[in-house]
Amino acid sequence: MGKYYIRIPRVYDILSKHYSLNISNMEAKEVTIYSTPTCHFCQAAKAFFKENNIEYTDYNVAEDADKRNEMVEKSGQMGVPVIVIGEQIIVGFDEDKVKEILGM
Image (cartoon, rainbow, N blue to C red; front, top):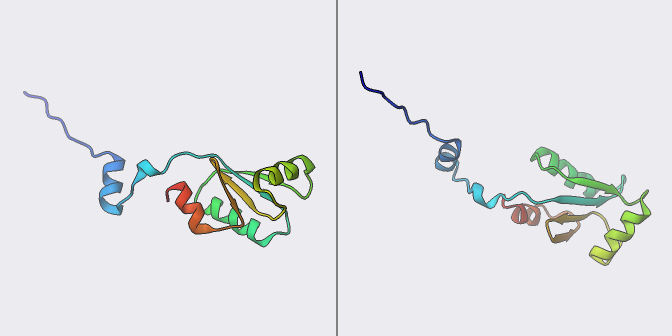
């Protein structure tokens, strides 16, 4: 009796066919947010990251003077949030820009 093989489609094949996903654009990039506890836009950015399962590092610049100085060196200002994705810096929470940089 001969052997029979069943081709099982890869998850990528299924997803890209049905959802027009371009998974190759979704590179893993380090995400950092410099924030304060009372900043509404900081909270919105962190909620966006959580909802989209994006891992990020959060620095509370209200309490951490070293990270506050680091944020000012990177962005040139004191406003929060400052979001760093890979080598790109976003001052404020611009969801469309975050999606663009992350390839979403």
